[in-house]
Amino acid sequence: MVAVIYSGSNYADWRLADKGRTVASFKTSSINPFFNDRKHITQLLNKNINLIHHAEEIKRIYFFGAGVLNDPLRDAVSESFASFFKYARVSVDHDMLGAAIACCKNKSGIVCICGSGSNAAYFDGKKIKDNNYGLGYVLADEGSGNWLGRQLIKSYLNETLPENLRKRFIKHYDADRRTLLEKVYHQRQPALYLSSLTEFYADNQTDPYIQNVLVEGFKLLINTYVAPLKRQHPDEEIYFAGSVAAGFKTYVQQAADETGITISLILKEPINNLLTYYSSKN
Image 1 (cartoon, helix red, strand yellow):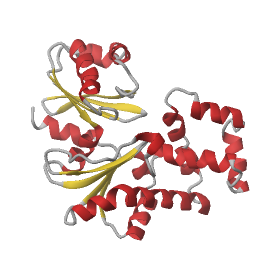
Image 2 (cartoon, helix red, strand yellow):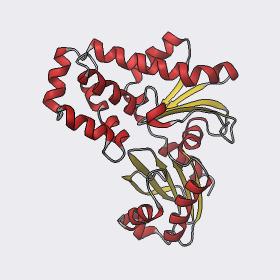
Image 3 (tube, helix red, strand yellow):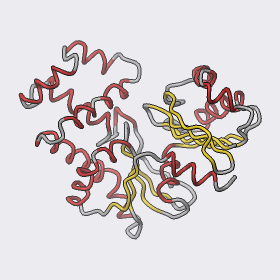
């Protein structure tokens, strides 16, 4: 049996398969070693009935997750998994590689993640080429869910949000200034709170102001990450992956048109393509 996991910042998507047949499909809270230590990861595994039931049957594990930035963080995941899945070989890598394999399989390409966070890289068909992107929600993540959340909070607090949207925001959220700042600056993993505000964009995406923020955010993402990669690799196709890119596909495409790039695919969830890819290898 094989287990494939793709973990973003909000949740981890799991698929368990045996001889090409999906045995279980479920989500858990995210597994991000940048925020979660070995104890937290082990506790998460021990609480899931699907994993408890199949732990001894699983022989191969392919994990791709945000926060797998270096060997110590990779080890935090692999060692936690190895202690729980006694008979499994464990492979742990960054979510960028998982998105690239899901989009490109064994072909080369330029891959951009746009979900809770954002990132992009060139994939040569086997590995991701190193770059200086992926600086996280404080310094980067342009166009992502948490970036959109930051713009919404700022425009509300600065009183630049149009009145009709301001009223809707007050109706649906605790709009007290102190509470908002508390959630942004003192809550654990504030990027998760910020990215949850993409729901407001989805509910109000016919509004011109919202449409403009979306398009400008995606143009910023493209100009910051995708365009430089395209200049370096002019013959490569461009792929997008992630819930925000898929949820606002129309505006991603508009931003691409306005910046002169062509997107070959926008994939919402890499997990199913990853399962197909790795099931065929086992």
